[in-house]
Length: 266
Figure 1: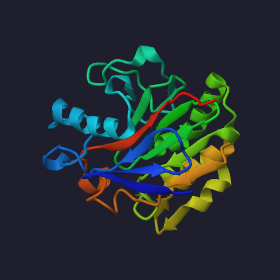
Figure 2: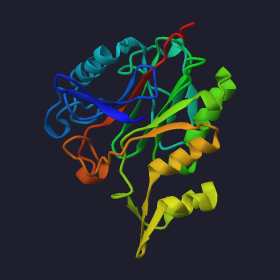
Figure 3: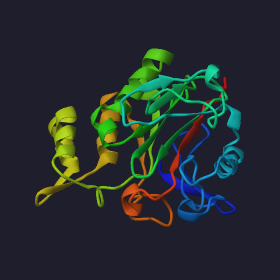
């Protein structure tokens, strides 16, 4: 199984073959935003208009067949907080101050979850047995805090999921080729995951290159997930296709990941 590119007109997004729930990892291609956010920016930022973001999200809603009124987002602050979403959260993402969290889970059919990224790691989760889904934003701090594993354990606790049934997909992020750090990041990873994290940390003089995709996959495996698909795309290597916070030095839009909870078919 793999993560493949899908196109509808000028709209381009990625889907994981192993996840049967409607979902995608977005790119910057196909939207109506202009300027430094030109394309499919899906987050309201300074210099962006609600109208443009709404139009961009509507393109995705049409492609994935979900209602914008049922789209629930995070208020991301690089935490390890995972929040359960219900119908009570079906309030426009443009007019609600959502609680702080970097992960969302739900088993409410029709609810769509979204996280925003521009180098950080997007992770989607789906249990086809219970229908439960999850969406996670994992920056390096969230990765070290095991937010991926905590999202899986929250699905087990809240919805009775068996981790062995959960399908996971890890989307485009800043790859090991480009994520150069000082010692703080590898120290945090080895403190969280022990020597196993060292396989995904490459020393380079007094710097390090860290593979956040594989460390999040390690976290998922430790939580009991065995079906994991991993994108090979690096956001910083492909600035015409993805936004990268590092590449643009913060002058950018946001892509993200969306997953829709659907009724389990008997």
